[in-house]
Image (cartoon, rainbow, N blue to C red):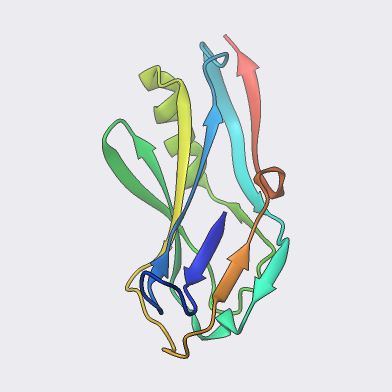
Length: 137
């Protein structure tokens, strides 16, 4: 997953790059989450993404996108996202019967330093961990 802006390319420079990751939760029927959190482990930093101060993490409940976190401006790429609201949202998604848990990361509002250089964070799929502490009903 890459979150940031683009450098020189054939398509266009300084465009926003948003990131998605999807988890299979089809086996989590009849589960109640007592705690849920996301951990992001940075693989690589490109350019100078420190000018970003509006890193947003959202999840999907059906067709509805719900913002669950605003990452602090002192973000270094590695962070833990944990809140009661996130755990409540995870429970709504589990109760809905969804088979996929989708996370969407972007900058809102989007900005660029317009330097035609890739500025952002790269994460491997294994570097974004969804943890759910559960009790089977």
